[in-house]
Length: 68
Image 1 (cartoon, rainbow, N blue to C red):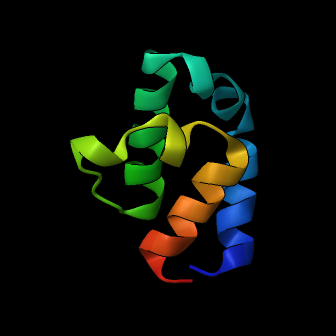
Image 2: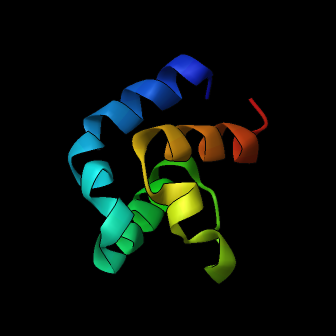
Image 3: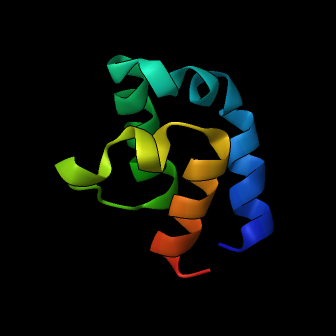
């Protein structure tokens, strides 16, 4: 998967991403989305606001995990 495809898929999921910053349930939903769509297995430590709390953070995190 390339950066353009990652951005497209994350844009489709933007509604939940906007709420993840202050909502533990939303963080878990984002984590499940990332695992399902991008095939990334997240550790408990990676499921946090820093990695999944904003659209930009998620994009950066996925790029790093996919080494894009």
